[in-house]
Amino acid sequence: MSTRKITFSIDEFYHLYNRGVEKRTIFLDIDDYQRFLELLFVVNTTKPIDIRLIHRYEDSIFDFDRGKQLVSVGAYCLMPNHFHILLTPLVDDGVSKFMGKLCTSYSMYFNKKYKRTGALFQGMFQAQWANTDEYLKYLYSYIHLNPVKLIDPTWKEEGIKNSEVAFTYASSYQYSSLSDYLGAIRQINDILTPTLFPEYFSTHLNIKKELLEWINFQLPTGRESQTLKSDFKQN
Image (cartoon, rainbow, N blue to C red; front, top):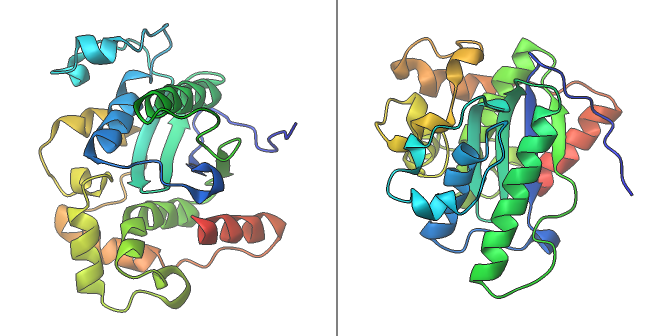
């Protein structure tokens, strides 16, 4: 059994990600994306949760009183075959409990809907500690620009060719938190708790400039960074 080398600590920031087993697509339609977004909100609680509440409150799931949260989410992005989440734990073992409930609940939903069995995700979720201010800024940029891969598959390796096109596409992508930071009014703002993260974005007008600058941060050398680069390249 594989063991995790990273230890999750309160007041620290972490990038979590996972993809479908055998790189399979894990979001096949709009309802799948919406269910995962709902789960990002509803399973983030220290109290036991009956997943059937999703159906009971399906018209106002974001009004559900969760009580104390396990983690604070600062950014996220759902891609067709993987997801990224930037968060900080609020309680001991909050990350593992949150991710366990999130991945298990979505897998059960997905398998029931598509009449399949077995694991949906590729093993244990991956995690990286954002141990510097520069790295945390890079992660905000990397996560929010991830959708650019859908229109320019080599942007991570070769750089963004057209910043205007790339940012316009990323900011209009429905399944990331970038539109929340840009001031879009929508119910799923409740998923985020940006006040518990550094206030990087000076104004909404500067988000484009800042994201495009932060993405150029050079990851440090060493075994951990090589693993990180390899993982990012695959996702």
